Image 1 (cartoon, one colour):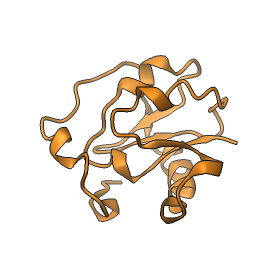
Image 2 (cartoon, one colour; image 1 turned 90 degrees about the vertical axis):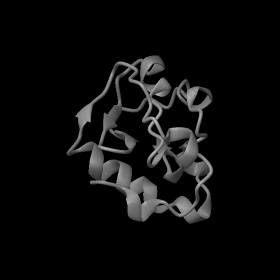
Image 3 (cartoon, one colour; image 1 turned 90 degrees about the horizontal axis):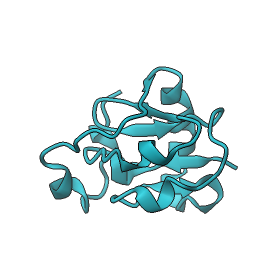
Length: 107
């Protein structure tokens, strides 16, 4: 089982999670983070660090978020690793509770 970044991260992109990852499995896009499933060791340290509650164990991913398993795997192959926390976007808190953001994901 691996961990997956889901829709809540889109346009929020808090990076608190990357600092606690012991294997540097996070990858960074313009407005989203993903977890590289080939690097993730299933430690779960990132889950409580995410202010957006956007990280799930793949087995616990809500039914309407299942597409994020493949999306994390796909984008992890293209995006660069992120290992240091950065400031969240200025409007991150405004996007925190917004639903149906997949169309806003910048690949």
